[in-house]
Image 1 (cartoon, helix red, strand yellow):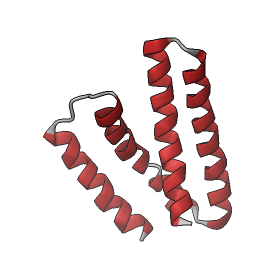
Image 2 (cartoon, rainbow, N blue to C red):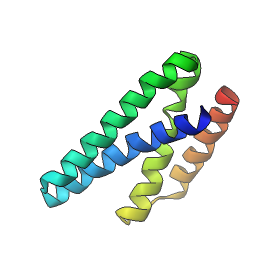
Image 3 (cartoon, helix red, strand yellow):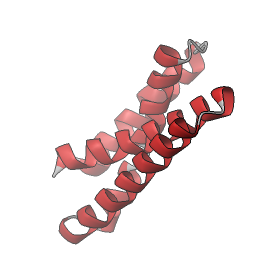
Image 4 (tube, rainbow, N blue to C red):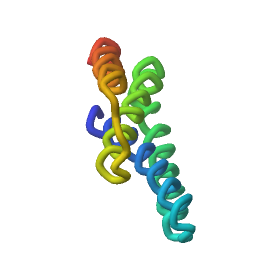
Length: 100
């Protein structure tokens, strides 16, 4: 179930990336891809809530912020300062306390 949790959060981040691509390119395909990833993430969220407690699934959505930062750095060449990386470390530490 942890793997599905990771995929769910990655889908949320990819959804945002698809919409970012659409904002810069205005290609319908990008908005469809973004919405598709958001939809897949939402469906996985529903499935996970059937098997895991809400107190695990909902806080795990914070991992989406980590994926978003990585995607923004890699795909969009955005600058990521040290404070944001410290934020990622804090998020990961918090997730470890909540989920594991």
